[in-house]
Image (cartoon, rainbow, N blue to C red; front, side, top):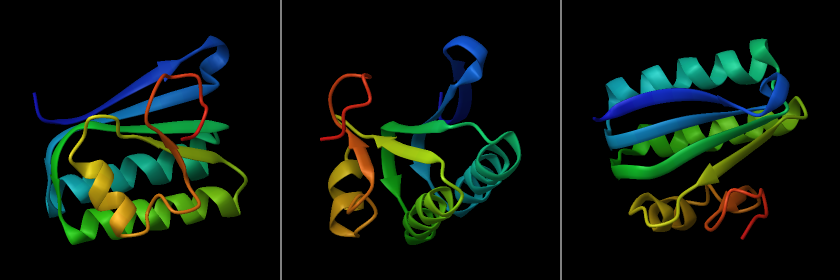
Amino acid sequence: MDGIQVHPVGMGRAEITVEVSGEVDTATTNDLRGILVNLIMFQKLPRIVVDLRGVTALDSSAIGMLRAAHDVAQDVHRTLVFHTRGSSAADQLDLDGVVTGAALITGDRSGRAA
């Protein structure tokens, strides 16, 4: 199923995973933006994982939005990481500078950045 799913993880919802799959076009980007703004600014969770392993394509608006979300999260002292192992999105995000300076999970879920 393509789309966006949100999963609380851990005791007291210390972490949340936003699972994204399929093609991330303008409409999906707008939905994802709303979810990330809510999690970063209003839910104030200390750690948010954006799981992009199921993404097949990202348009330019999605790439810009992910970069902006990462910057905002840093500004308000939240951790936003991208989980991309095995995703075609990984190289695209790296080439476009989204993961430069951002935590990128490519292996296990331990939180160690690669």
